[in-house]
Amino acid sequence: MFFLSKLEHKLRLPPHKLDMPIEESITDELQSIFLDKVIPKLGLCISVYNIISIEGGFVLPNDGAPTYTVVFRMIMFRPYVGEIIEAKLIESDTKGIRLSLGFFEDIYISSYALQQPAHLEPDPEIPNEKFWVWKHEEEEDLRVEGNEIRFRVISVDYPTIPLEQDQGSKPFAPMVVTGEMNMEGLGPASWWV
Amino acid sequence: MKILKANAGALTNFEVYDFLHKKGASVDPAQRVMTKLRESELKVFDHLVHTAACNQTRESIIEFTEKSKEFNLAKSEVVNIINIRPTDPVEAAPCIEDYLERMDDELLEELQTMINTVLPPRPERQMSEEDEMDAS
Image (cartoon, rainbow over all chains, first blue to last red):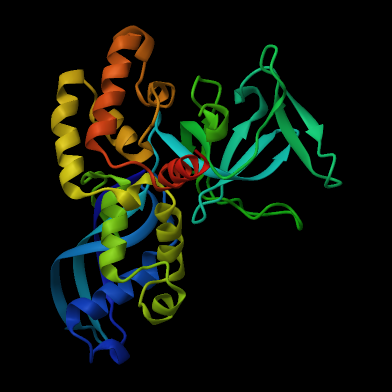
């Protein structure tokens, strides 16, 4: 799930941070720039792991703050193809299900990648809620729900930023993970234990 | 920003959990108010606290990587197993690519026994075992 990536960045350190020890203030500045942002092909930035080198510190003309060239390692969230991840169900609709990891919510499993045969059923208790249900041989129907849903990663995509978005459509997701759970052992953990 | 090395090493969930824990993350709400960690880091920590990572130790992971060499597992599969910590051969099977060709049921059972002895059990399972003992 997590990888380390080595990055180099030229950053401008705001003067109000100059009273802290330099490593701390640079880490702080890097965190505000990178954290929670997606770098295409590298994944979602989680945290700065360590700083390898700091160079520079020159003050450029017309600027009131020093500029440093920093080489550092960052923890990235980047699931690889074939990885098994456990996530929580957020919503189910006609296209499939959407799962979340708390810090990352764009995991989609389309309906044909669920354990077959599966069909969408409205929830008897809560109106307007639907659940996917797996009909497994002679046993009773098993619902796709819960907090420990295991799936296998098929692909990780980084769509480009759209120039225009219609109002009311889903907010743009810079990183999308697509998964499948039609293998033995995948799906809610309660199905197999 | 320049990317010097896109992949400088894989991290298991335990290593990320340990890193955030050392930085000051915790489940206790009183502690959380005082940490310097950002919201997103705390969310990652919250997710990892519910997985097998919170029980593991560095020594058990090193031991497991050593012993898994006998089974000819790829590095990604070893990381998968450490992160998921299966309790049953049925749970371990998806972690291994093409397991039907490379392993038979016996080998899978052996792998599962090795996992059970080396890696600490997951937190929820510990609770359910306690419930079973109380019930009996």
